[in-house]
Image (cartoon, rainbow, N blue to C red; front, side, top):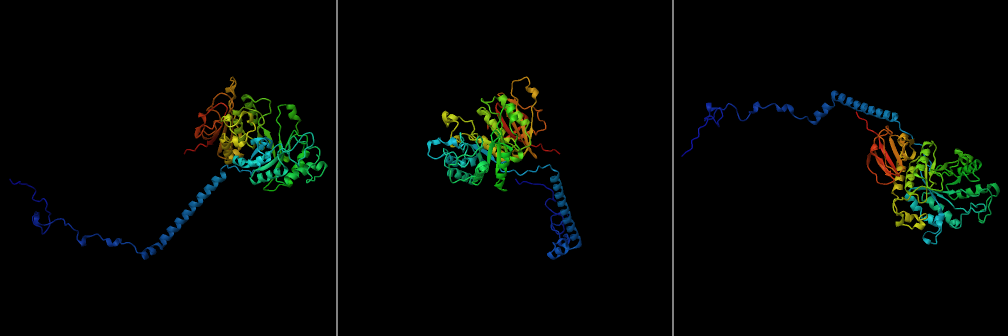
Length: 499
């Protein structure tokens, strides 16, 4: 059956003329626009090169470009002026050029310690030469040689070294090798009898007799490349007259790039009477004054005694450039605390042979109990030296730790009045916007920092190193808990301004 579909008779048709089947038989809307009804597109033709150059060279465009260039230079000069004003007004410290004895690490060494090491036939002096690469790896820049001259009942002959340590040519070679390796040599002349002239057994050395003997002897070693001499303030010959002569001599051999120095080592003594009787050191005659962080004592200092000594040192620290060493006795754990103190204080650190070795690893794994004090550094280096290396890197990379200002930060003493706990210690090294906070806890109890303590310090920082080598990353200052017998070095971040 066919399907019938009814629809609109006009569906599918257009009204327009000439078309059948549509209403009216014609279209009312043409499908294509006649050409005579198209928009005038010829008026929007692109400009030719000649037309563009002609328009760009017109007076209007020239005026616009000149003003645009002028505006650019005005804005650039304004920014440059603003930058200069900010730089001029910013409080930026100016670093005073440091002498070589102020920016190098000193290493005190006794060649006699190598006499029986490894039972070899080489001399002690030769073994010191063999360790120059090891000293370089530690960052040592100056080596102080102790015990190089005999001093028994007879006066000391400064032109001949102790023959038990090696021959005189070997000693000369050690000085030459050290200078080539970038390690300067300073001769320690403490506790030597320099008051009279000895009998010379070396016929090749002819010196003037009488009072000129010591001067000629020092000249002898300066000519062979020695960078200076050390004398103790307790020596019989120590006086302003002696220092004046030594000063004139080292000045004669000094140049702009190779200055020679005179060091004075202070001998710590707990007796006020003996301290008052010691002659004062004229700072103009001495380049470096070596001080001990601890007084000499027959027994190791306790944590409370060490805290008291350290606090006194930190409170009385003057603006001079001192040199620090450790002569007193403390426990192994507190030795690491003192290493952090010595490497972060203003001045030149002087470490003894073996002090660079951390005590965190079991000593018995690498050396016998019988020879712990005189073990070879090559064996000792198997133990961790990370603490020492981290301190060296921080000291010589950060301006604040090298020549920044020093500020002692006391803790609230009332919190420890009725307690047996040893109070912590802290100080700040600052250079411009860079700040390093050094914290010490020498006691046996854990300490938390009071939020009201040193409120002016930045609240955030990052760990640089610690005696336990177990702290790293970012830290909030008031979240720190100081562990027993621990020292921490933190680099603080300045708070960002909010607009």
